[in-house]
Image 1 (cartoon, rainbow, N blue to C red):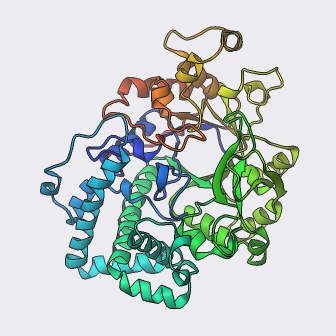
Image 2 (cartoon, helix red, strand yellow):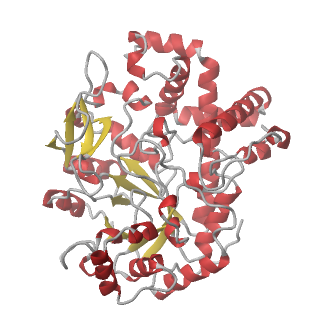
Image 3 (spheres, helix red, strand yellow):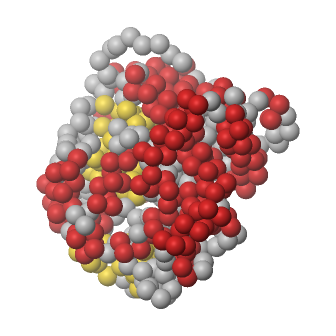
Length: 507
């Protein structure tokens, strides 16, 4: 699907300012939408928004279709009547530029549990009907998710394949027994999803009314320790005896890592998925479109062929490529859901077969300017080599910030960058690359907010292959200034990426 000429900003919601130590779906998220509108943008791109486990990676979620309860705004729960300002009387002083996840859990989870108890005891008949309706509509994934999380809590966080055999194997009798036994915890996990989606829906509606579309992110793989693998083991390549991943996902050695990336997720049992006409995947895409407008498919190349690493390996080096039924899958998806607004993350080891699959369904691929200057004029990341149907980024969540990237270049590479640009802006290399992205032929240009702010490596979101210390960057309230908005707006209008003017009110 080709998109009109436009632009947007990449920012994960955890990065919003908040007095609770982590960004949430409260007032600052609405202010960010206003900033997008005022600067002429049309897209807000987010990372996956599911509940995260060890390492806090949004790409390793406990459930593919659930929302992260840490993104729930406690202040909005006051508006609902489930908390009051007195509940925030002893909030600790959180750092303003980073998320300390352990401390955030200690503060926010008790608040969410208190709100749940108040809802349970005091919800009106109408509110209870709304909750019941949500639970019924989302039951196809919510029932498994809520019980899975309650079971993890009861088993002190242990992975599902170490639980008692009957519940680890998702036996119906065990399901009923544990669901009754853990009914209070199950209710809590359903309630937090209810509140998350209520708040997210309000924010998305506000964004859409103001002309902003949200680009969501669907990781190709799900975490092994997730409700999805526990409830649908037949869809994954698992060890039948232990339940561990028999074949693990990853990528071979590349730009980011000399030993490759061993993600540890189980790869799919594509034969089973084909037999079910890809029902699990179709439900996943359908659910995504309930709360985003466009879908970025992370690791798109895995739908053509995927890297398989045997159980027991410690790096991704000793793997092999296995072909996937990507063409059949996307044809089925189109038949069931219509032509989808999909962006393909086609970075890494890309073959003509991957490009053919992407182009067959007219999915825009990705171009990253930080990859453009270390090669010859045939480099596909140089703007004069772009097709129109692509999305250009200065950098992604896996890259250093543009300032950090530039500071670490060799003199030779800096000279190549300067030769291409013609000169360097006195305001910083980030504005040179932002201008280059905006002026390119690519239909969509996406700028990470860290580049707008001219921040260095300390503001980087993720270091691939680094297990801890990622996903923590935040900005302070007031950082996205009117001056910054006007500068971005000028570039956006100058290069034909602004929306058709329309009147709307700010929040």
